[in-house]
Picture 1 (cartoon, rainbow, N blue to C red):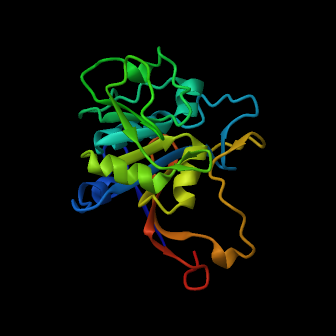
Picture 2 (tube, helix red, strand yellow):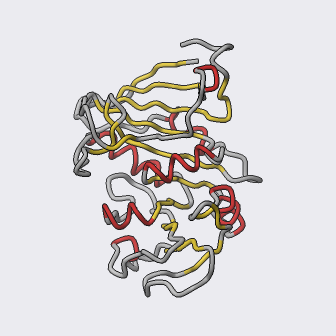
Length: 248
């Protein structure tokens, strides 16, 4: 099922779309709520073959991401994203508080000088399979269950929830988001699509292959056109239906 909507302002900077954030604000308090965010081209690429990705999505999409951060208790990234992009993971483009910063680092690859470890008063957490030493900027180590050479997504969510982080944003990278989707550990997926065809490069979501389209996820989705042309697909994965029962 597909719904459409639009938001933006004449000045080119989007105003908050309440519908896109309502599910996060209204999430039940007795269980975790996980939203994942992915930015990509029309043909599903998040970067070129060389890894270049600035800027596939434009200003309004970046602003939307910062709003997402402001709506959650913790933003979660894999260590590969930290090594490749060195993100700050803060709220800078919108009003609001920066969430706790959580890095999944099963094998101890986190650089000591990573920007996400800067002491700005926000909690800085590393998730490991064991509580071995971490860089000095890390405030807390949390231990989650190991799985397939990494950490189990459901264990990560449960561990963070037990530590007081109820609303989580899985921000990257694409492999981390794909693994969380594969394990059914995402409630809501925000896909920001830029009107751009790259033609080759790094794909976004990659899940295990299926034999027939009827086995595909078909979430109930609301579509929002951003002011500068990017499109937000707000997908409710808890209301996903089979291909046989719903057609777009």
